[in-house]
Length: 264
Image (tube, rainbow, N blue to C red; front, side, top):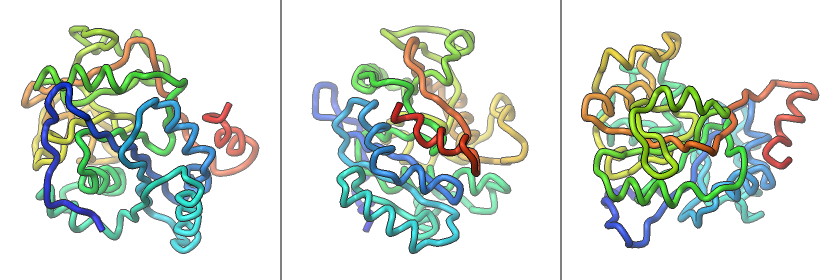
């Protein structure tokens, strides 16, 4: 049961800040993502005492098998909660006042993220896509939260993407501590301030947000980017720590190796 009665409030600086960890999986990657060792490695690299560790499951052919794997991972102590996106999609769309048809082809790329935001009552939510994970163990969440607590215009934070530090710097216009400050948003990795993200902010457009891929139409990350630009909301990108975004092959030795990557 998801308790949505009390929306997250912006925690005051110095108070105990709650953060949920979340990732997702689907037909091609659930056998990798739901392995206890895999999740332990990803969570451990985040170096934070999460309130909950959650997986959102979408588009799987054998629901019973996936649910059995998720329950086993909970029993192994590597996960606290799993949700099937289809069970909570209607409630999440209603909560955020979004018409499903408005996504076009972007619905499948958006519903897990919205269900995750709907499900969380923490102050912040850390999300990794199923094909993304922190490159190394580093305490970046706490300093990012300190900055976001001190400024209303800082609403999300992320590690740099695939070691592309020069690219991240080029997209920024200021710095704070170990972070670059700029616009932009990616659903590969985000630490979201839920007093902002758990609200009806997903109905806006901005010309700069049209850079997102056409095949996904009006997807979640495009909507977030538009809202942030329209309201002067900014993100923090770490200047020296990165996450890895690498597709999970459908078979062969490359798939086996990809499943072992966060454990190496």
